[in-house]
Each structure stands twice: as structure tokens, then as C-alpha cells.
Image (cartoon, rainbow, N blue to C red; front, side):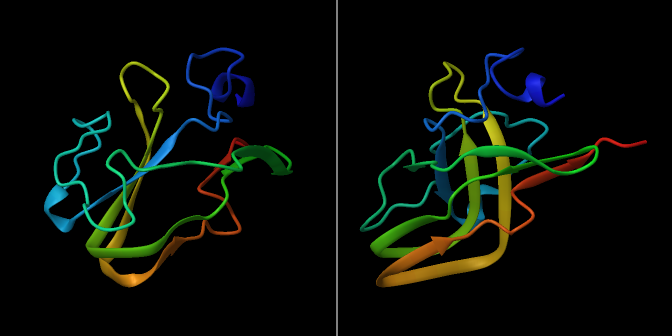
Length: 134
């Protein structure tokens, strides 16, 4: 399964460091069944943020236990930013023609910065952990 989730079997390379994190306002109301690609609709704008988002770094698949796969990345930050109402974060495959959505995160509330840093740190269990054991 891990080979399927990296470049061995599919065009989507989860380990690539060309993917991007894009930020959205609470107006986005994502429907991840219907919306499967990056969209600029309701994307955040403000000082320190570039439309399309920021490049993902530190991508890694690991096997923390028998039958378990974990996917994680480095933390991402928008330093010296002034942003209002950041509610959703999408990770998408910028290098693919379709800008395919990979992960969607609902922060649960709107976050603001005022010439500060918006820092998103993945959990120690990763962004995605899959237990393949029956």
C-alpha cells in the first residue's frame, strides 16, 4: 500500500516537496466529495500570504508499527503576516495538472495574525495514519 501512495504506482507522489498548503476563510464550506482540486474561491488574502499557498516541506512516509503507515510533513508558517479568519487548510498537488486535493483540515475556528506568525504544526502521529491490520 505504501508503494501505491508514493510514485511507485500512481502519478501522485506524496513524498514530493512541490505540494502546497493553501488557506481559506470560513466562507469556503468545503465539500471534499465534490471539490477535489485547489480553488482560489474564498482563499485568504493578506500581508505575508501568496495566493496558491506555501510549499510543503519535510514530507515523509514511515512505518511506526506493524501494519501501520504514517504520513507527515514539517510545520508550515506564515511569518510577519496579517491574516483574518483563517479557518481551512488544504494540501494539494501543485505539480499535477489537476491540482488534486490531498488533505483538508478544518481548524474549527477563525485564526488571525497581526504582523505575527501563523504556525501550523502537524500532530506527532502525523497528518494521516492508517492501520492496515484487519
